[in-house]
Image (cartoon, rainbow, N blue to C red; front, top):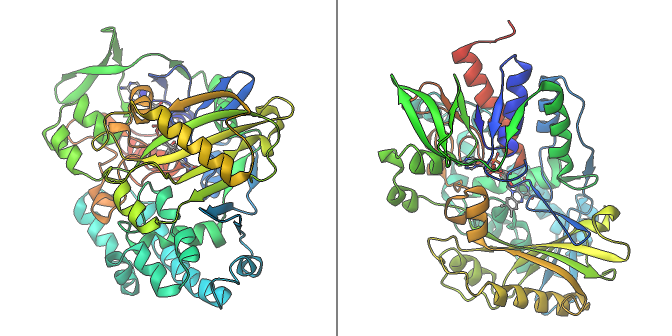
Length: 490
Ligand SMILES: Cc1cc2nc3c(=O)[nH]c(=O)nc-3n(C[C@H](O)[C@H](O)[C@H](O)COP(=O)(O)OP(=O)(O)OC[C@H]3O[C@@H](n4cnc5c(N)ncnc54)[C@H](O)[C@@H]3O)c2cc1C
C-alpha cells in the first residue's frame, strides 16, 4: 500500500510492481501526480508546479530498471532561462555555451568566461565527489552517514561553512552575475544567503553536466505516461481518500484509516506524504511534534497563478525570472515575512510557447510562481488578490503587454491551498530545507523508527527535493524494502 501519488509514490509503485509486489495506492487529491500536477480550465492547460528538471539520467535509470519504454519525451532547454531586473528592458539569456553566455555579461563582468570556468570547475568536482557517496546512498544510521562524509575530499570543506552568496562573491564582481547564478538556491526553496556553498554543485548540473529539460506536451506527460504502465501492471489507485489514522499490532502497522473510517490493510506501507509531516500528524511521534517541526527549516511556500491571456506575447521567453533591485534585502527577509510583497520577485513560464495545444489559438498560458513565507510566518492570505494584481501589473509593465487587459482566465493558489490540496506542511513548497543538518543521516529516514513494515519516499526524506531526487528516493526505498522483505519474483 502506498499513500500518495506524487512522483516518488508513482515511481516506487512501478519499481515494486515490476519486482512482483502487489501494489495499491490511496491519494487525497482527485488525480495522480502530487505537486507534479495539471490544471485544465477555460480551454487552457497548465502544469501546476514543476516546469523543468535536471539530472534527466535518473529517469533513464528508472526506465531501465523497470524495463519500460521512456514514457515521455525530454526537451533540452537552450537557453536555460531568461532573467530581467527591475527598471531594465534587458533580458539576460542564460546559455550553456560559455562563449555565448559571456557576451550577455560583457558589459558588466570582465573576464566572465575565465571566472565562470573556474567557478564551474570547483562545483563540478564537488558534484562528482559527492553524487554517489552522499546523494545516492541509503544510510543505516547517523554514524554511517558521518562515515560517508569523511570520504568527501577535504578540499570541499570550506564550501560547507561559507554561504552560496560568499562563494559568488569570491568569483564574480557584478551584482547581475552574482544574483542570477545564485538563483539555484531558490530551486532548493531557500536563498543564497542561508544555503551552504556546497549547493554551487547545482550550477554545475545546470550549466555543464546535464542542463535542464522539460517535456514535450507539458510536464504532466510524465504522469500520463506512468499511468499507462500502471494499467499494464494493474496498480489500483483510489482517489479523494485521505489517510488520517492508523492501527498497530505487535510493533507493526496493521492498517491505515481514512477520513471515512475505512481501513486499508497491507503487509508493507510506503508513505509518499511528507515524511516529517506524516510522522507528526498521523503517527504523533514525540520527535516530530508540531513544535519540533516548526523549529526545523522549511523551504519557501509557493504563491502560484495560472493565467490565460488573449494574444501572443513575443517579449516573454519560455522560462523567465523577474527580479527586483533589492536582492539582498528581499532574500534576507522574505522567509520570515519581514518584507512587504509590494515588489515581489517571481518566475513566469509560458508553456504555450512550445506546446501549442496548451492554449487556444492566438492565446498564451502563463504559469507564475512567487516564492513567499510559509504559513508559520504568514498564516493570513486574505490579501492574495492584491499580490496577484501587483504581479500582473508589474509583469505587464516589464514586458510591454497588457496582461490584465487581455486576461481570459485566472486561478490563484496561495500556501493555504497548497497545504489543503496536497498536505504540504505549513504550505512549504519543496518540503524540508537542505541545510547540512537536514540532509543525509539528519533527514527524516526512509524507514520508520517504530514500525518495521513502514517506509517513506519523496521530497522530505532522503535524498531531497525536486523531481530527479524523488526518482532517486524511489530507488533507495525500493532497495530497502527488497533487502528487508525479499525479491518476490526470485
Ligand atoms: C510550485 C512548485 C514548483 C516546483 N518546480 C519544480 C521544478 O521546476 N523542477 C523540479 O524538479 N521540482 C520542482 N518542484 C518540486 C517537486 O514538485 C517536488 O519535489 C516533487 O514533485 C515531490 O514529489 P513527492 O513524491 O515527494 O511528493 P508530492 O508531489 O508532494 O506527492 C505526495 C502526494 O501524497 C498525497 N498525500 C499527502 N498526504 C496524504 C494523506 N494523508 N492521505 C492520502 N494522500 C496524501 C498528496 O496529495 C500528494 O499527491 C516544485 C514544487 C512546487 C510546489
